[in-house]
Length: 149
Image (tube, rainbow, N blue to C red; front, side):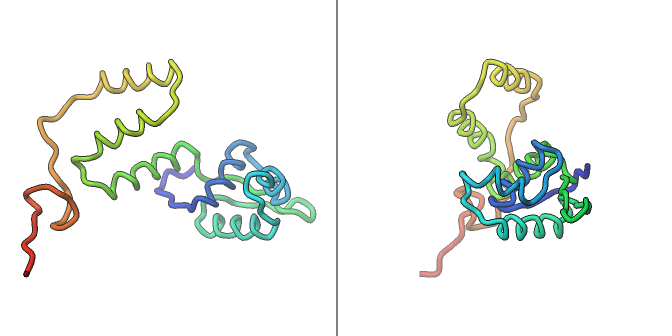
């Protein structure tokens, strides 16, 4: 499994979730699993598999007359990459509030809450977080831009 950052579309995520679960599948199997949720034709699934193959997040092997597809990237590495991508698009000063919002919105088990509390207990707080935005991208006073009126 590779740990390189991976950017995949929402539709590609649906296909990858099937591959991560089954560890290997044909295009027909993927289309059948996603039929009720996505209402995709087999051609759509094959197009998505082609895109994922070009991105090198899956590989295929010919088995008789059909291809079997396998994930090349782990689900956890892909989720980590997506999280890092999300955080790269917001002000560093807003990441903590964003995490709190995610926790507020999520349904969590007792084990989930325990794991989050353990992670927070191990975290060393910093005195302040520097804004990493360019002028005009956030509301920090250090980034206020002058308007030519």
